[in-house]
Amino acid sequence: MIKFLFIILIAGFLLQQILHMNNEKVERIEVKEFGLLDDGRTVKVYTLKNKLGSSIEILDLGGILKSINVADRNGKFSDIALGFNNPQQYLTDSPYMGALIGRYANRIAKGRFTLDGMEYSLAINNSENTLHGGITGFDKQIWKSSPSTVNNEAQLKLSLISQDGDEGYPGKVSAIVTYRFNDQNKLTITYLATTDKATVINLTNHAYFNLNGHTAGSILDHEVMINASHYTPVNSTLIPTGEIATVRGTPMDFQTSKPIGRDINIDDPQLNFGLGFDHNWVLNKSTEGIISLAATAYSPKSGKFINVYTDQPGIQFYTGNFLDGSIKGKDKTFYQHRDAFCLETQHFPDSPNQTNFPTTELRPGEQYKTTTIYEFGIKN
Image (cartoon, rainbow, N blue to C red; front, side, top):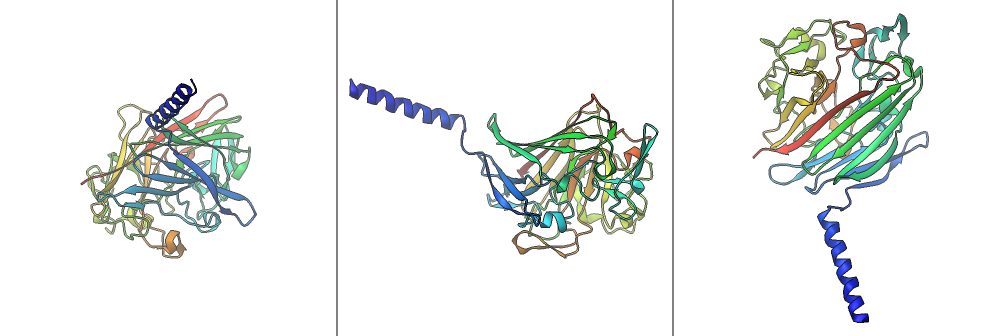
């Protein structure tokens, strides 16, 4: 009888192990302390993993994508996201590397807008304009974090309360951003927000990519496609003029994939204003609000690619024009001019002041919700 019970126990244990393996209940997310800020606050880093061996590190500080480790065509893993090993640098040195941006991604002209007859003045932090939420935007806050594994995906839910008047914006805003990383190397970012007072909102992630690895240098050989026949030209302070212009016959035409470096040094007023590409493209959408392919990027050297899908109407393509070698990042790397590119899904810059742009207004009882997917892969 005892022997029989022992066999039953062993069989039950083995069955549990088999079910455990079949359900992929391996460790998909782990947390550890990343470091201390100068003010004594602790920053945590969450590592999201999949069965391909890929991993993504996310900080509770600013929801920052600290690293993205994926394999190249030879199976060698490298980190394709620029960033830092010291959390304080994300507050003092970083040009928004990997960060969640809010309340308003991109620029608002002269830091002013009018909503329901009331004029609001925002913090000025970019020449005469407001950039990426102001001086202390969402990227510089420590978010409340909740890690989990859902349907064999590593998931990190981040939440933040932005009080009425933060950086000059009206309304108490509750924001929830969820990162999900699956076994197909897809990183899905879902943004949710509500408010108790009419406001404007535009959230994105500002990851800096180099598909050859963050230490690899120039990205001018990367090939990019942007699914957009129009873009929004800017003035000398990178504020949209209000025009929605065709890309045809201009350096802004990425409808067919081309190397970033092909046209970037052309003597063109728009490129001169941005020191390269730093513009918003108006995405081709058959139906407003559907998730569709926005852009692709590919490195012939490593074979790595990124496909970007979003339900947003625009995407900001930026080519690291303001990197100048003064920033010391991970692996003691000094990031140089055009060592990375960004593909930031968004509503258009300065929309609160541009009546012909899609609205970014959010009112009580409404929910701001948007989804972007970054798909990482290789081509042989």
